Image 1 (cartoon, rainbow, N blue to C red):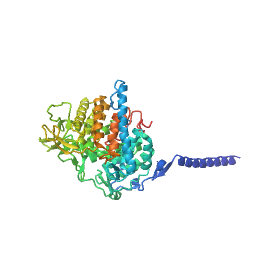
Image 2: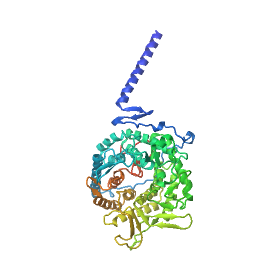
Image 3: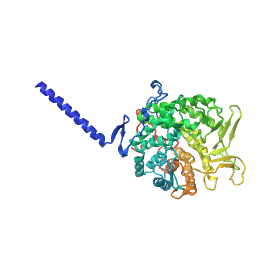
Image 4: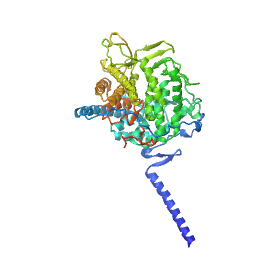
Length: 562
């Protein structure tokens, strides 16, 4: 009897196990989860894996697992408060009504721009609104589509968001319209856009695509020096034959830390953070010994070894976001890696001493500063070129954010003067738009408003940097000056740039991703994408900040999803 009883129990266990397996299979199919390339991915909305598994590639210059640098140990630490504590007096009924009307105006333009892209360039990188045709400038994976995801979510275009996700779910990173891609551009637009949209919506499809892309981008670091090749040639990468560029823009090297860190936080994989960690050490080593100690030149030497020997120093093109990412990476790591704070504070001191200047006006305005360009020879002679690049207008927001993060009120003041300077530059031209590149001095040139002596590039490319700084200043100080300046700026943008079914010169995905997002946010409730909850990358993609209480688990998505 005992034998028969044991046999019946065994049969019962087997039947139960088989039923469990069958039920699991049914549930997996119902919940749309499946293994792809050895990993479990969500297959809803038609998820399709890329046709090449970059994670299966054998590196030519593999990093020893013992040398892998994981994220800093320990739970997230509390950061100083960044945003102003807005009171009911700050946000009275009349002000809120005006804000609502203004953000709706921005939202209408965003819908118009998105509809133009949806109609004429769906799935392409960008739409050219004057010719109403699509164009591929970023490898053809749909840059505007991915770059706009978080903007659609933030503005409440959820149907459009899910429509876009269905296309994103089928992106094949192995199918590009070019033989290579820019590591820098692909990281800030595609990887940043996917991570941010995942942080906001909680969509696992977006994280799956971000992981696929991250594994491809890791191949850029498979070089003899482990410094990345910004020109990621797909064939060379698959063959393990990449080398770092002999000469590279400093921004291309220094604008990877946020995205790779956030991907490590969300996936629990150390290799993404480990890949960018050596860059930090090269910056630390060379910062005191450049020709302008504290800053790095516009161009760096990466191969055969890292050097920072050039003579031009700027917050504009080719170097801007290197500096922007220093305080922001400090925030994303919740202060657990002190190196980024050290790098920022040293750079900020040099910038204040040597790059910032007040325009020489007939009636001086002490509340205005502009960022220039320095030519340094490493000795006593340092030349300041009083040129103003629109790209450098991000600096006001950087100083304000850094001032709050490091409890330095003087940095907030410098940020205000810089933000005011760029807003002032907008006001000086009849169209209400600041030129791309100009030179400022005392005196008057025929045809130019004082104090401009030349406008080397009169175009305005719908750039976000000026309104970005106004947005940060508003959130940090709560002073309505910044909101009113932003509205004047917006009126100039709409008047000068409107074109048919789109907006003139919308040849870059950052129009929806950045410019419209910052205008929308400055006219929105301060709790929407609070700077105490999110840090925004250089393409305005918000990443959730880990908080005390996460207990080291940094893969939680943000309040917009909760």
